[in-house]
Image (cartoon, rainbow, N blue to C red):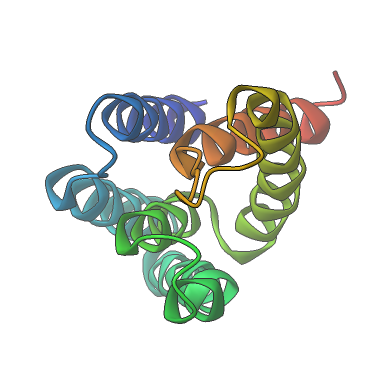
Length: 144
């Protein structure tokens, strides 16, 4: 339960900042990573620390190519890494997949508002998609 509260508070703040400013602050993402490392280490010792580190690695690896291709910002990558730090590699993969679905839905919903003839690149705040992906991953893991 503590992990869920920490994750949802952190991802909620990230999503809010992403909507308001188009950026996800390092203060939030790195703080969440540190919380994940600390909680997992205190609760499970070296095994928990390794789980948190592997979760960070998986979170980064899942988004490093889209980031490198300019499809998203570094804050999105660090947000997913923070989710991995708190919840581990299996959960971050689920949150990523549900977040991708949520991102697709957000893109489809926001597309009618973008001009077809505009050369301007329209973007969605992907932090919001990852927030919904995280919520969905929690709901699915609890059997709701």
